[in-house]
Every structure is written in C-alpha cells, then in structure tokens.
Image: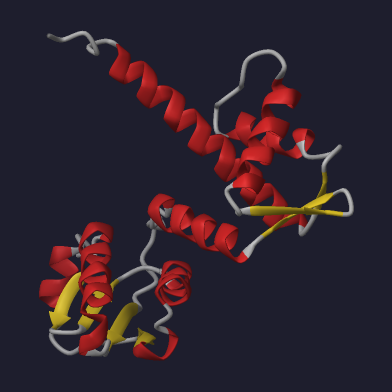
Amino acid sequence: MYTNMGKLEQQNRKMTRRTEMQQAILSTVVSVGVLSAALIASPVMGALARLGMLPYSRKSEVIKSAASRLKNKGLLKFENGYYALTADGEKILRRWQLADYKLTKPKKWDKKWRVVIFDIPERKKSVRDKIRQIFVEAGFRRLQDSVWIYPYDCEDVIGLLKTEFGIGRDLLYVIADQIENDKYLRQEFNLL
C-alpha cells in the first residue's frame, strides 16, 4: 500500500539537484553571454559550489548532459560551438530568479519609503492577483487598493516583476522621504 514511501524524498532531492544545476547553467550562460561547450563545466562547477551542491564523479559529463537537456527543451541554443540562452530560457531563468529572490533588509533604515503603485487592466486580473500575492509574501504592506509600501530598497524585484509579467507601464516605483502619519507603518515594520 505504501510502496513509494521513502522514495519520495529521494526523488524530490534528485529533482531539486536537477533544477539547481539547470539554473546554474542558465545563469552562467547569461553572465558570460555565450559559452563554449568545452568551457561550460568550469564556471557551472563554481556556481554549484557556491550553492553548496557538489555533484558526484564525472561532473563534467553530468553538466554537459544537463546542458544538452536544456538545449533539447529549447532553453539553450548551440551554435558554432557555443551555448546561448533562448527567449524561453531567459523567461524560465527570470521566473527562477523571482522565486528565489529574497529582499534583504539593511542593518539601518535610510528613512525612505518605497511606494509601489500599480494599475493593471482587468484583462490581466490573474497577473494583478499574482503581484499582490508576491507583495504579501515579500512583506510589503497595503497602503490603499493598488498602493503598496516597503521601507527598504526593492527596485530589483520590481524590475523583475515588470519584465516577467510585461507590466512596465502599469507598475510605478516611487521613493518617498515622508508619508503623512507614518507612525503606524514604522510600527508594522519595527522601525521605531
């Protein structure tokens, strides 16, 4: 009845390793621009080491095989001996970066508020809902219906959201020195 018990964790670890390796390969190709097939293993190994993930023996062969799978999925293209990202590869990498993006809080607040205002059309309701969900998960506070606030620099994540969801003009990022009656906001963010 429970024949798969014990195998689920093993399968999950294998899938996680595969995703991390694919992300490392795509990130490496993006940072270099294009990457020779012969050189792909070295920078990817460095990226995997930084992730704390050191593959087993035959690592170069494993990485080349993973790159080949990414090519077959249409995420990488191989031309004239070099790998480069496809449009789909860039989209997947941005999605991974967005999912992995952690907003860092500096030790000291710069006393500036980051206000995000969006006016996403009704036809993109699912995008609007996803943006709200991301804001809540990231720790933003709702100031008004489509106005969110955060006390720290978050321009990078806003840029990723604009790119990922194609809402560049629908999402505004404002840095404000003061907000009237902001004591309750400072309390919510533990800034007193």
